[in-house]
Length: 593
Image 1 (spheres, rainbow, N blue to C red):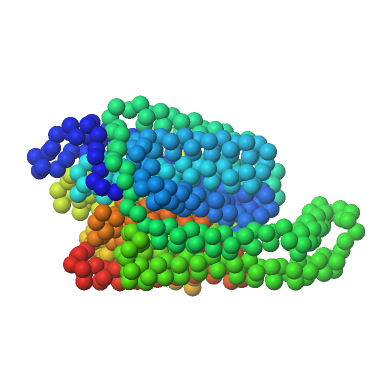
Image 2: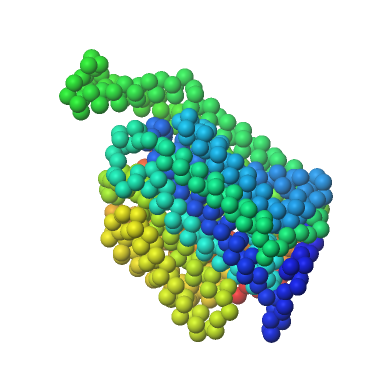
């Protein structure tokens, strides 16, 4: 895409004394509302997942389909836009303009909210997945437009700071989202697993009705605001026919890998398991009530449980094999593209640059581990050795994980403001502590006891120290934070009790600034392919659809705590990516130190 032609509203802005184009603060404030809702809905899924598991009687993989539908929509939406642009030579978002694209995306998400309401009314889990898929398709269009729009609202040299500011507001949404969803589902009450199956879902309908109305309201505010420029450009897209073919092949292989997993849930063995599990549940209910009318005894139940184990083992092995194959498709696919495209560059577009293809894998891994930890921390807390909390009690911990992202991003957003260096250094210490206090305050106001989270401040102080050490250098920051996250995962795997919980929660602290670091390193030196490269990176939000279900299925083999080894492996790659790509760019004369 060629240089952006900003509308007259922006072009008329006066320059500051330093010669930098002044930031359109009115448009910036409006745009940050969109960032907020991305986080609000995405993090709310972390509470919705364990609830749906209990309410609909799902296994961990099935409940993780919420993430699969949500983040898979990001991939398919961005892929569709890229294929359209590559085939027609036109950038749809560029032709519409950033403003109109965001409005269309918001209205599309409102349609998804309506689909959620209908699905909840008819008590259909599959319909809920479809509704979330539509919401996320709208988000995909919004995000494709919002990041370059943020850059265009002021001087290009300070664009990343505005994106960080948007990320900080996004994280406020991720902090509030789990608490609001928990209140909508449970109010101030605590429910047992059995009671959750009888809960009334009308509050979810009200929640998504409110969300849908807000989507429409923000679309109207955005569309009619005179302070928000249209942000149109010439709408041309650089051709990349080989990249199109490669991505279509990868998508087809992913569908081929997931199809056997989905179909296995309607297989004869799966149906037998469901019948046997219903018999066991009926016996346990009758035994607890003191009136056993089914004619079964403990010996009979033991025999049925043995049959369940016998049927489940090969079925779970089959599912795990295909899930692993899906992950392998991404890993081998991107690494193969990296090797082939670097040798014969024609037709690959932005993928001819190795830092971009390696960065695509880094975004895939980063989003995957962030969502996997956030979505599976609830299951860890339900185990007796980690508190034995019910689905209605995990909200403050989930909020702290997503709040950890806010803590780091607020610290990173300090550079978005024109402050003296001494003031920035002081704020870099104070702001994370204020953000930590705000997370605790929100949880307290929601009626939760947060005393167990007070000592989490130690983890926050470690993150603050890392900020001072890395001095805003993208490669060093990603390398240090990736290493610290790996250490946290290892501590969590080897420890017990609250130490393990703190360690896994702190992954949010260290993930907080990875997105802009990966983007900076991946897009460095791409020239005219930078916008296309950005679209490729957005596609790899797909990691949030694939890695969490794999961790969910791995729990059946190594237990809940052991499944977090997935996170450790992800952070190994992120730390190595920072090192190797930095060295690669240095050889080309691009220095990030």
